[in-house]
Length: 238
Image (cartoon, rainbow, N blue to C red; front, side, top):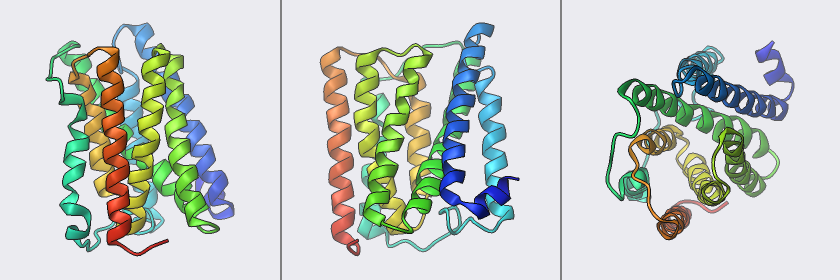
């Protein structure tokens, strides 16, 4: 059924996966909270979804199309991906602390590692590739904005409005950067690794003032956009 839907219409396929992903993870988070252990249901769910998608992509010979196959990259054009190290470390800029129990921390890290893979495959892989057949620039914009706005679902899980809006802003910038990297390098692996590290290290992030939150979001946005512009200048134009 899944393969038939994909063959019939890739855009519809990507939208179905976005909706499925958002609904299932939101429900899993709420059930986990009800059980009293954060990510107790979410972690195994994301593992199952990750394995399922990875196997499905491989079975249908789509690893190259979705950037999961080994490719030759001219690393100098991407500053050897050094800016990604800075971006990935953003949650440790104020230090690190164990905020949850050991079990909850492990479950959280597992789920966030998988979320990095799932979101990159769904938004940068499925959605972007479905859209770029008609207009690449439009595909980049839609994929980036959709990814950013998708974080509004955090409000349903109890997140505050202010931090969520900031998250949406820098998520759009990160989405833009990851899309450019994928489009230019033909590899989704750098995006998956960076995204997964950002997510998982949030388990150890030390909170700060509102001003710090705004400054951090601004810095992350600026670095992401400047790096994306650098890549554009170092590679072929659209």
